[in-house]
Length: 182
Image (tube, rainbow, N blue to C red; front, side, top):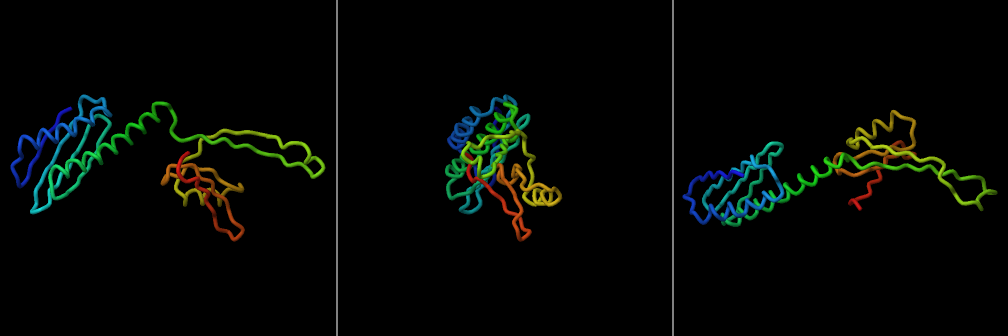
């Protein structure tokens, strides 16, 4: 990992450089890329101390910027942002390595018999597996409107969760969103 510094409107101390390097070296534990380039831009403008970090590699480009009244605090804040971005990126790549883009959904159909046969237990008549397509809510509404289906299961591109959309009696659509993943 190569680290480059750019300073504007102040002379940097060796301690500030070593502090920045030690904080940003920790990103290397999440990324195993030897060609990683980290560029740190530091600027002082009156009482604002700005720090911006750009991390670029083979398949990676992350940026984070913060400002505060102290350059060390700005570096800490930028490092926290970058760490969150790197974690999110590594979790995404782990999911891709497993071959799972989107969560799969299993549908089961129940058959409810007449009142005379209610004494028997309900049983599953059919089962189906599919991977829902990622789409926005507006796209899902258009697709459900065009089809004759009673509901639509889709992967919400905004929330990155499985949602179910169904038409209401007044012609509008309702969406069931399970909230946080469980």
